Amino acid sequence: RVTGSDMQGGLAKHDLVGEMAVGTNKVQFVKTHFPERRGSTMFRASRVVLLVRNPFDAIESYFNLMMTGTHTKSLTPEIREKTASVFDEYVMKELTVWKRFHEYWLNQDVPLLL
Image 1 (tube, rainbow, N blue to C red):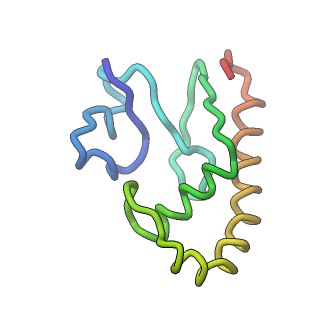
Image 2: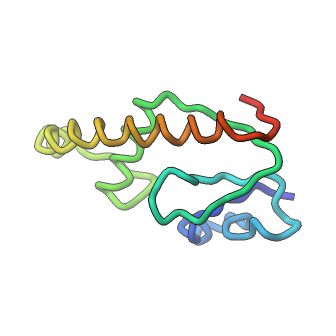
Image 3: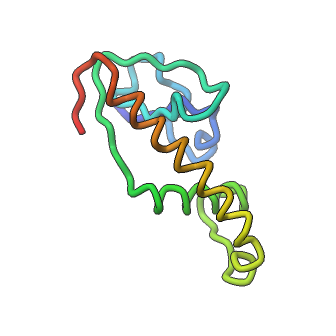
């Protein structure tokens, strides 16, 4: 059995066989971003392992993903300097998203391992 996610196949191209296979018997653990973004498909769980990243590291990583379109590159220091005001605004928005995501899972009536 493998791990998977409910993402819409973005990582399947890297031969991660559990991607988009969450409804099958192949997947033992599922990574979900629900309810992080509007429009995310609702994900129900009978048990939860909540991995909590440092919000500053997670927000920095996601900013690089959004700006570069890849999981493997980061912005150069020059571009980062040019986008500093964009990043500052983005951080304020993402802190709220991060907080709501964790509050949602912490308030579910299911066994939770933190």
